[in-house]
Image (tube, rainbow, N blue to C red; front, side):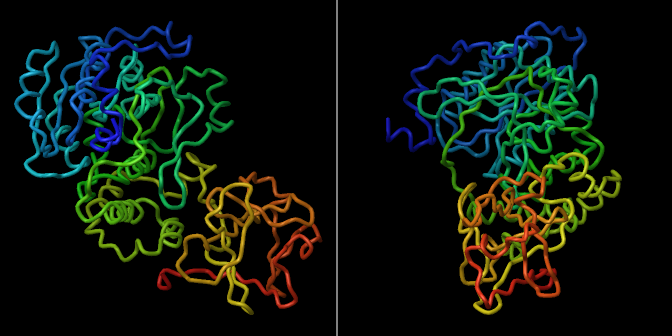
Length: 471
């Protein structure tokens, strides 16, 4: 079992012992089970990209799509082989899918091209009114497709995602996901799941069966009107392999007049692996940094500084020509990133208004405030200034917070150390005043030094604003 685990980074022995068309529980909310959808819904082509995928997980994905999709809505399945090397994914696979009830086409990339370009190849070959992208280790549940297509019928510019349930990489147990989380991102442009905010609950008026507007999507599973996919600019073809394409599309859809939603009545399971079994030409970090640089340059305006200052090595990465993507942005008359933060993601880790972004330095000792890689409810520290961003990057926001990503410096423990807590935007223990006359940060609460465990008589603080030329 352990040896087989290494091949795909999941328990292949367990997967192979489970039926390809196994039954699954109906995990939908009760209100979803009684919903009635229009008779005339658009049909869909399902695009599944695979590279050296396990036989059982790939075919279980295909069978779940066929078995749990109304036949008149499922036009075809396109399997895009990104230059797999395993023999069973060649002629054996072609012979297997030939006898299935739904037309299944296999497209083969001539050389390893990565998820993004393989999806572009698959999308270009689709004939359905809607394109549905799925990963190669998924399982669709009862009623998964109709709510996605119904929402697109209502609004062709709605890009819709199912709730992504968890299939255990160890036991392959199916575990229902929550309808109370949505997609966001941090300063490093890493996609993250966060609790659905109260403002979104209020907009839906307590009806949990209504779609959730999500700032970003995970990217592996979604449906989009085929003509709208082309109008909005498909994927950025200058991106390599995988990584960053989900945020790039999320920003683009919202800023250019579309919407991105999680349809809570649709559930699709996904095997989440703790590590990737695949190698990236040029290295994983290099590829993702290039892709993120492209999306930051095109879509984030001056807010890209947050990404660059916390990941200073990114600015040394060659990212190619983005002029065509900037032309696309102009042609679509897309809104600025500040609009996105203000209207779509006001609870973003990137503050909409801030005074400074950089390091907090004790000029006498040349030591800098450092989050020490610690997490919520742990102490902030001091470390020798290294000028490399990362843990020594803080923003001083218009709400007078000292912030690192989604954590704020907090002095709720009287005479105790400074700790990092979730930013609550209610000022109080997280409110700091910057006194420019003495160049020191003091608490609004008049108990500055006793609370700051790092105070001394030589203590001088200054925020250093990083200009573009200083990276």
